[in-house]
Length: 316
Image (tube, rainbow, N blue to C red; front, top):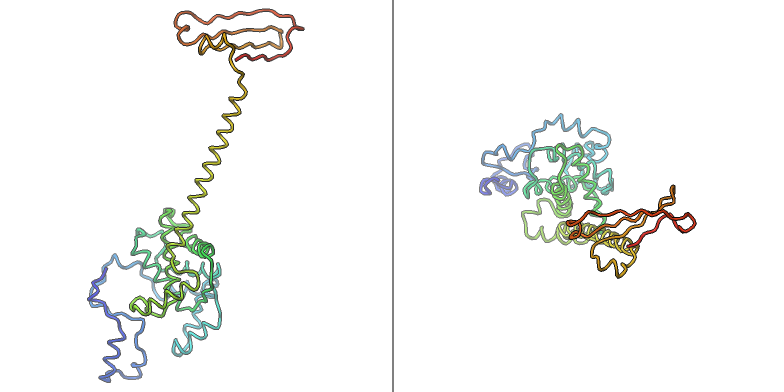
């Protein structure tokens, strides 16, 4: 991070220089309302990506992106506020999936995709929100009133495009941070230019954000996570009840033990009728204590076929 004492907002300097009449050729008409002067060296870690003008023009002239960025309007002659911005406003472009996709692709072209080696910390989320805010505000998209669920869907589309084909694949935390950065950027775009530098402008942004259902991006995403956790817990409980029902059904198939069997403890009697030889074979399984003293004995009796009523007889 740069020392705040080395970063200066341009308009105050512009106003001071205008009083001394130092500008020539009408240069005083440009106040530098979006400019900052940095009296310091920018560390390399603060440079996300270097992109040439030609590279950006090639990217912006792609059909799907050009319809959203509209460089033909941005390159018009005239004042931005008086000429260009009203023309952008007349297009009445809203946050459709195609527009969101173009915004995400533009952010990725600036180096904000997850395929970079940067860890998605709070500062990276802040950078993403600023890029989104500048694009949405500068291109004058119309922001409609949406429900929390609709804002969640909009954020998911943006994160999906930004994370597409990222190597390594985006983690859950990265995806949520991207969603947060996007929604925060939309929120800031509802304020005036450079609203972050004025308490009054911040208050105005918050009022407008609340009016479109975007008062708290973090709460919108946390509510989505709570609903997902509730679904997981509900599913697990249904599975537990289902398995419990299976166990109860298995136990109900077992008949109660006779008094003689109860005296033998854990010993079990099974009679299996042979369908081929019509014989009944009775196997006596001794309990663990008796098994140490003698081996299990096998008794085989021949029965008349007419006396056996079933091929399978089970005594528990």
